[in-house]
Image (cartoon, rainbow, N blue to C red; front, side, top):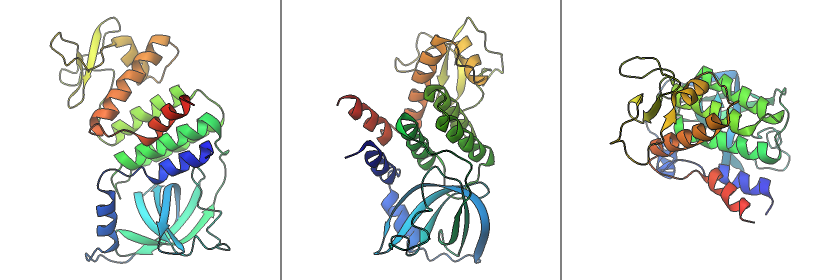
Length: 272
């Protein structure tokens, strides 16, 4: 199986625990709301999966409505106008309507403006999509995060270092979804981080000075690393190494230890 196929399969199986139950509840929801019709909303397909014989359910990230699920009726038919449009990592203009949590896609148009991803950039894109699916609640808009996702795809497509690009994306994601505060101040005391001091990021509280009784699995990082991360500066090798450990720890903690499919695929491919 080609690497791109493996990654696409990962994206299609990256829903958080309880996805089947949540999807079933959405499809069979009896809660009625006023009919919603949205036109020409900027958005991206995060992933899609089959629905009935000829349709798809697409999980999309939109600028003003957050992450939503849409039924793309007939999208699997060979001559469907939607078939070649509903691609990941491509900016779209989406229109939909409906009363329930699962709404009906009316129109999808390719907007353009981004280069396609390939190679390591493609893997990084699927990794970003998986994080969005697992951390963003449905219909909870984050315009800043949406705009930063566009920037992330742009940086990846132009060959900028994936490690730096993803660390910045992870930090914005955790902050915008309420899982992390600023990196340049101690959360409880509001004291500024000192470059030469040692710190931990308490996953439920935030930055504070490191102590001898801290759990062994909590990464200890320098104040300089935290200041660099806040400034999106990854020029120091120590910052690159320590930020990777810190973000891996925080993501794993807030995911409840559930592994990320794209990360495991990367490990598997490295073994070949």
